[in-house]
Length: 271
Image (cartoon, rainbow, N blue to C red; front, side, top):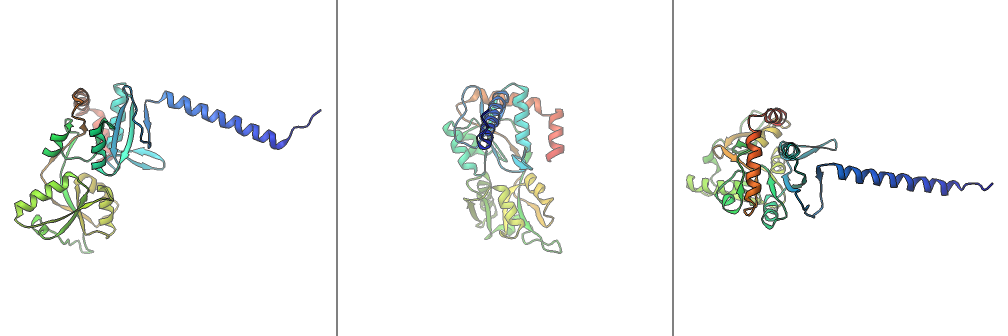
């Protein structure tokens, strides 16, 4: 009787198990409605290509689990309406907007206050929620802050995410105050990263949305976000100007979302 070669037997078992894993992965991929991708290929058919900003409100990871207000919302809505989606993450808004304009994305979701520039360039959905822009800075050990009002911003340097709507607001504010504000477009960091740099003392201040700042402030008590830069602003998702049908569909979904049990659950979890 011919003896089995232990090495050959182990190798055969390894390839058998590998084949089984591949089959399971394929089956899971075909069964799921929502997929997470990091590649640069657009999904076709009736799949919606959704870009979500990396932030506690948009999309984040914890213990290999994806979460976020917008992430959970779009997944739940798409599942309820039987519409498959492909989700990708972004940190730089302008890059995501360029891809939305070119047709690479169908929807861009993030902390995006709608202004004239964005409304001229894209279709905006009904508001998801209301937010406002604030200055984030560090307080000293006694709780004192360097900038106490908008007037203190004159001749100061403020960091904002590259080409974000925050820059437009600061430009308008400088004209209202009658003095210059040095606005620095950050090419490397999004809003969440700028807040963390301020919290760690590596930047003096930055302008971001209040809700995001308040979430991060829970972990950094000395972070101050009391100086408001804008009034309340609608936060909406953006859609390519050529896709009014999709915008109408999303508006219908958002209308059913407001006042629902899902809205209360997401607000309780994230806000």
